[in-house]
Every structure is written in C-alpha cells, then in structure tokens.
Image (cartoon, rainbow, N blue to C red; front, side, top):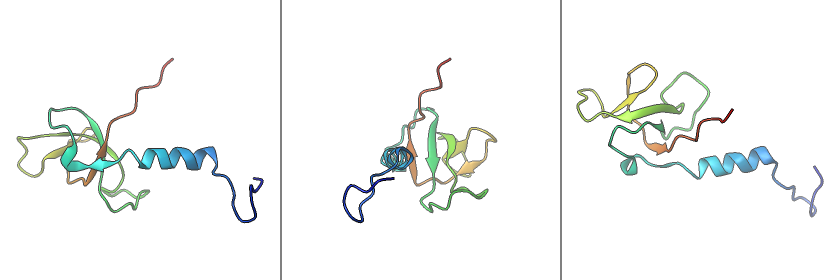
Length: 92
C-alpha cells in the first residue's frame, strides 16, 4: 500500500470493516429483552478459541434458572457483556 505521508498508511477495506463492526457493540444492559435474537459476546476479546468470548446468537430468557441469556445454537446459557443487532441475511 502506498503511504500518504511518511509513516502513515491508509487503512485497508478489511480494517475499516472491522472498525465499523466493533463500533456496533453495546453494553448488554441496553439489549432487547423481548425474545429478539441478537449477537452477544463477553468482554474478554479473546476470540478464536471455543470459549464464551466468541460471539454467539442468543436471546434473553427471563425464565432461566442458570442465566438470563440462552445461546440459539445449543440452548446453553451465557453471561454476555455486550450485544449488537444481527446483520441482515444475505440476498440471493
């Protein structure tokens, strides 16, 4: 990539997309509690392993005994710190 000025390199489209994605995370206290599925994550930021820190599709479960958030894939409970709306599904 060509430098604009000495020592400054423009961000790549992938870097810009990651910044926009990360800006969408909101505190879990602001998440909908009406059964809407959302993307949730813990605040550890250690993504890539098989832990709760990976983002999950989940919904609030007010009747849960072991936790308020249930992962859509396997029904396990999670204690997320952040959420964001799910993106629109692909078209085609």
